[in-house]
Amino acid sequence: MKSAYLNKVLETVKARNPGEPEFLQAVTEVLESLECIVEKHPEYEANGIIERFVEPERFVQFRVPWVDDSGKVQVNRGFRVQYNSAIGPYKGGLRFHPSVNASVIKFLGFEQILKNSLTTLPMGGGKGGSDFDPKGKSDAEVMRFCQSFMSELYRNIGQFTDVPAGDIGVGGREIGYLFGEYKKITNRFDAGVLTGKGLSYGGSLARTQATGYGVCYFTQEYLKTVKNESFAGKTCIVSGSGNVAQYAAEKATQLGAKVVAMSDSNGYIYDPNGINLPVLFDIKQRRRARISEYAKEVPGSEYHENCRMIWSVKADICMPCATQNEIDVKEAEMIIANGAIGVFEGANMPTSLAATEMIRKAGLLFSPGKASNAGGVATSGLEMSQNSMRLSWTFEEVDARLKGIMEGIFHNAYDASVECGAEGNMVVGANVAGFLKVADAMLAQGVV
Ligand code: NDP
Image (cartoon, rainbow, N blue to C red; front, side):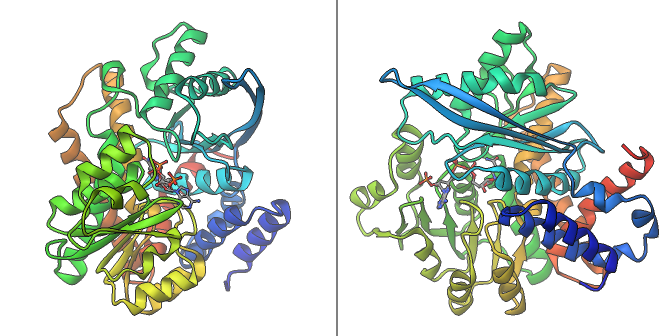
């Protein structure tokens, strides 16, 4: 980076947050993108905007004790970062996964500020979670954990303060238990306090599908605008097999593509005939089983250990929808060698900085998750609107709004890349477009 101001901010962030590689990765990427605007806006430095932007407004860590089915006491760690509330109440998911720590939560919360700004809805950035692993736990254990987690989190959230949702390891079941406990503690049916709720108690149609569908709507607009292409007749890899991956695969298939590979953290499946989605949904949603089951049930498909080798499969469209840094240099080399058209992120930060650079230099299209996966939080915003109005929109109505928002995000980010002299660089475009609105609001609100 050439900017002395940005370098100084980055050095301070590094010194203050040692041992937090994911967080530093996310901040580095964003600050590099902002280089093209800081000179034009001396008021940012004069008002310490970027110094404040990289520092969370609040970071809460708490003990989560719970009793397992054998009667033994277990202790996990809970987190919530309330990163930036300049444009609305904090908003962002909860992740339950053994890899969760302060670095992961802060990187996710930081990215969320820009993502939420890109949706054009009034939502600030936050994120939370725990190192609890729901895998292999009984329903009763998951419920007791969620109740204990909420018995502390409840004092930090609210429809005008902070509105959590799901993420890795937190789906409809967990949101239900969390909402039930919040209602019991506060004695309020406060539907707007969580999103991703079930349809019978304030949820929105199409929220479950929204992130995955949104990735495809974004990708469709990107392909059409810059290549006059579409999903029709293309082969796709969708890594992961959770909420985002399942519905990205479903929408890509509906749009005429063939999804040939999916994965979980143990390995990947390859099905040259196109993944049979009803079988996959049954394995993952109903049985909560491993993806290896698929190859036992679908003739002609194969299962391979080592999920990272999913990128060795030849395909036109790559949609990483599992977790951070799943595509590093080795995986990027395979994607480029296989002649893919592009990488369209469904997960948060699934591509390392070095791999992003390689993919872009090789001329592939590349969309950062904060732009292409914003459909989930956008539809959470629509769920909040419906809760406030005490109305429910139809699936088609929510889906149409989602599609419009994703197309808008694409064009907003693309136009920002042009204004920055980096036409087509969607990393720069998304970071700049998201940042400008937040910075304006921060300037207007004074030093807080
Ligand atoms: P789920 O828990 O539903 O699914 C996660 C999937 O990724 C599973 O297949 C899981 O495999 C796999 N996975 C998780 N950790 C790893 C790992 N360390 N290595 C390899 N595979 C892994 O989560 P979501 O689908 O909700 O989230 C996926 C990604 O999308 C995350 O990056 C999340 O932050 C992002 N995202 C999610 C949104 C949402 O609305 N849910 C919104 C925007 C972004 P296994 O079952 O074996 O663990």
